[in-house]
Each structure stands twice: as C-alpha cells, then as structure tokens.
Length: 125
Image (cartoon, rainbow, N blue to C red):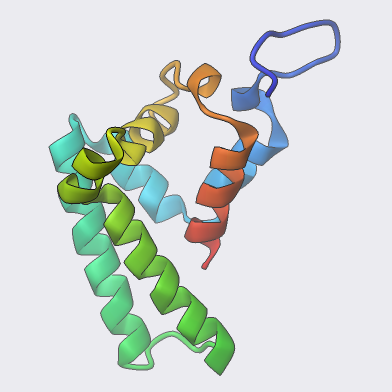
C-alpha cells in the first residue's frame, strides 16, 4: 500500500484506484461526504440502497439477468457491511472508513488497496 509520498509516487488518495472508487457511484460518495456523522451516513446509505434495490426489482434499471442478480447481491452485502450488528461482530466499521475517505479525511493510510478495490466492486455492482 502506498501511504508515503516518494519521488514520482502518489498517495492512495491521489491514485487512480481511489478516484475510480467514487466514479462507480457518485451518489454514494455524495451521501457519505455530506453526512455530518456516521449515523447520518448510515441512514442515508440505507435509504439509498433500499430505493436502488426497488428500482432494480421494478425493472426501472435495465440490466442483463446475471448483472441483476449480482447487483441485488452487492446491495445485500453492502447493507450488511454498514449495519451496526455486523460492525459489532467484526469489531470494525467499514462505514467509518468509507465516510472518512469520502470526506478526504486521513483514512487512506489505514486501509489497503484491497479494501478500496473491494469497495469499488460493491459500488460498481
């Protein structure tokens, strides 16, 4: 993981991987970055994910059948990741890291490129 900036190197926050994370779902980034706290972010994302799920289920979003299944699974996984119960079980808040990253707070040094990549895949689905 690149966390220190050397000659010609970028930090994780400046890298294309980080930028691509938010390009996958600009609405999720906006919800996270505009939330003043974790609970506000959690509620905003939960509402957004519920609405998105119903848009898929009502056929308002055109997707290939395999993409449709993947999208619904990604929504379920993301809901689990941001749930207080799962945070308590895991002993860590994925939501907090995403919230801090969206707000350009110093969280990049605490997460791996793998975390960014997995989050990107969830947002993409």
